[in-house]
Image 1 (cartoon, rainbow, N blue to C red):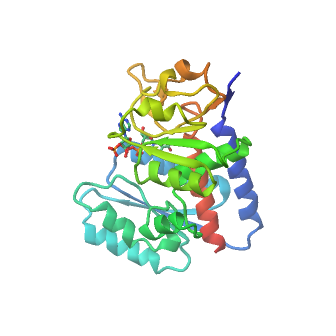
Image 2 (cartoon, rainbow, N blue to C red):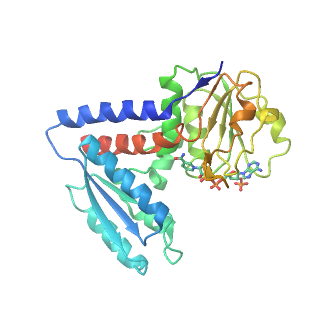
Length: 276
Ligand code: NDP
């Protein structure tokens, strides 16, 4: 019987640990959350982040800016928050409106306040094994594996997807944990042959139910990062859960697997920024 990895439970565990840690500190931790425009999905994410802050005892300050906000105005706000010593973390909700260059904004955030772990300095630190903020979804995946006592060292890990926010950083993290890592992408030849070698298969491609049992080795651990809404309004991942379930030793469901871990690890980064 496959283990269904319960991300909701682990994320609650982490949030409870953080809550205790924050209560024991003798100071406030402040996260600034900036949203430009009113994209409904972004509003839901931002509200969930604010709720998590409240639960843990982190002060969250909201900046809801109109869609017409210019790049210069946004840079000005980020710089102002960089300079405020009482602000520990700055989060700019992505995506930004098309007229604003996201890379430029990310690079404006002071690396020691970049709780999303997207700043090139933090990405670089991760790749050379230095301490820094790690992107939240990949960090959450490692926590899931560790808290389920799934061995990583020496294992063959295949990552499908090479995005800057998931694929590349999770590959780096798994390497740091001493797995042997292969990264696949849309130009990979014979994808199935490679994924079938994986002891741990991590899928972040953004295609609903793409990974079926033909891609999976018997007994593999499968981590599904994808999240999609079906025609019948149900959520599903990049992995065809029902198809692979008989073959795997452990798997993350969608919803309730990787998803809840992202916010938990964001909170972890905020607490770290507050302690530093
Ligand atoms: P991107 O679209 O940025 O990247 C997708 C990657 O998959 C690319 O590297 C692409 O290759 C690769 N890819 C696409 N098609 C194929 C294919 N047929 N075979 C092999 N590789 C392929 O996606 P993200 O990494 O941002 O997100 C992936 C999924 O994870 C999405 O469903 C997203 O919603 C979800 N997600 C969930 C999060 C959570 O908290 N649970 C957080 C972030 C994302 P190439 O580079 O060659 O184009």
